[in-house]
Length: 336
Image (cartoon, rainbow, N blue to C red; front, side, top):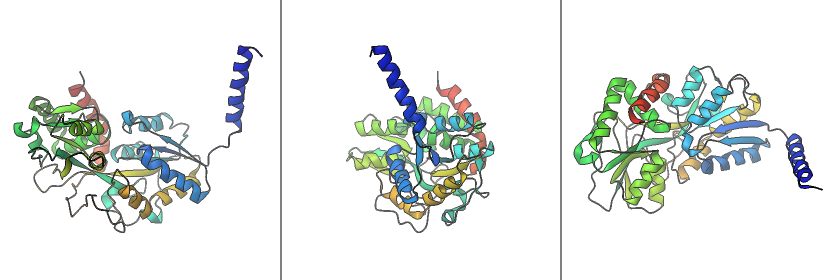
């Protein structure tokens, strides 16, 4: 058989295998890091007997890529469930009419600010926005957002550009609390203050571990990884306004997508995912996700709302509605 014929036969075999492959019982789009979400989805497959096609976002997209995909597929939905590692983009999907209401019994018990009143999305397993700082140097970390801009703090610090992920969400929260002109002015002053910009939360965390920066503004999961890896670093909560106003807490969220092709299986998955056991597993994982369910006891090393920090009150619907406009304005300012 010639080379061309062999190539044709191989291609035909692949197409035949794909055609014969069993179709999934459930399609899940997931933006939580695959190393943490994949074992849980595999456990659901074992427990339910359902075949799950799980598709994961990549680190550089920071959730936005998966959300754009869901929006692009809205006329002919492929996915049933979106497991997002943050909240504002999920609410934006609801505002666009791309989610469906479903409230399983396992959704009960968590704080109302992290649950949709109409049951379109449910929050669990959160991250806090914090300062990671070096402990092998005489570093005093900033304690408030505005303190980050003071020269004594700014020259040693870094944060991700607020263009994607939790950093975009964070500064959209700031725009909602203070007004968008004030948020843009904060970013303009940050650029002039000596603060360094990174491409993402993990990027600035790695800068601290290398000693490039004395501190960075990041998420607790990235900070927990640096601590677990043995670097001389520690975490300090950060007030997002005047002292005592609170630290920003951003949960994972899960929602069923509108016109989900496998609605019954989607409901089974959401009910299973929202069990307290899921939060216990993610709290014990290296990412140290913060449990929101009162039945879950945070293991040592996991920050506890109400004990280690107060939670910032946020109008999440308003934040989600302002997300796209803020992203465009922040991008115009920070991307040359």
